[in-house]
Length: 66
Image (tube, rainbow, N blue to C red; front, side, top):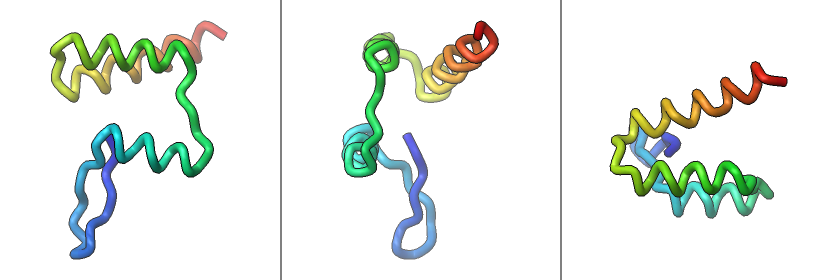
């Protein structure tokens, strides 16, 4: 999820559907592996912080293996 500024200047969390819609307008798409990873993480029952940590680790591992 991503934080956005509300009308009163307070931040709020965008849900995955809203974030996907904004990304689509900007021409951004998830790759097949990323989509599968997110689907697995959503169904795993992990909390938000654990899911974010798993995604960060996946990208960290991918960058160091190149």
